Length: 299
Image 1 (cartoon, one colour):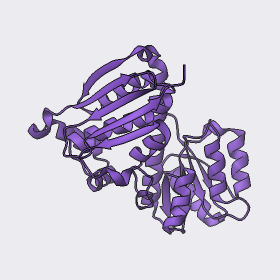
Image 2 (image 1 turned 120 degrees about the vertical axis):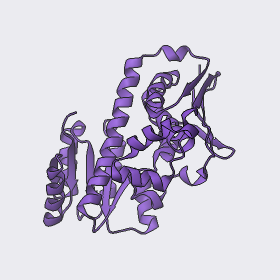
Image 3 (image 1 turned 90 degrees about the vertical axis):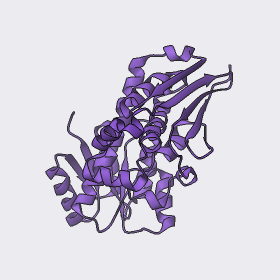
């Protein structure tokens, strides 16, 4: 995998250099900008070079929110994660950034470990999404012929592979696969395997999430569990119904991007699915069943 490139934008020279040094020590290629205008010139010159942008919220010439909005308005950069570093932690300030597309946050002052954890999570998510989009393109459009289908999957690899296949049943499969894979992976991790939010946070911090998933898949209480995906189509929409065998969860708080989770390394998948991938998303019952739908263009 090629070296990840991070753009660091901060008008404070000492802070900017400290960020760049920590990231370079971790193996990232770093470009830095001392102002919003300088940052935008770098972005505009070569928008595809960046895997993440680490952005100071408050700058004198062009603040972080303005740069963020410009980035998210560009189709060639809309998926690039923007990490907002800020001392403004009031819920209204964080919510403004979330609504503009800053799904990752760092609160000043922060440690090097926190910086690397958030940047690493953002880039992993970005590269995972990009790989899914590329795989969807390779799968082709044969699934556009699908009227009804039912599938079962056991682990996260099967969930991703199946998502890249069936996303082609919908228009704009590259958009749909991002949300579909998130919902299907949730059905495995949180649903069938019972990994809770706080536990997943700890496992990610320890680098043990994949190991824990493998271990749980072998336990007798989880070994026989399967999640299901049903795909159906009519003249108006394509529907994806995902069902797991877990106890469900309190899903209402995850439908929107929450300031409470803005500083975590995960917890954005359902809200991002609802905002980016689907025209309709509905959880049912106790939360172990979710319906996601995409409108079809008028004939």
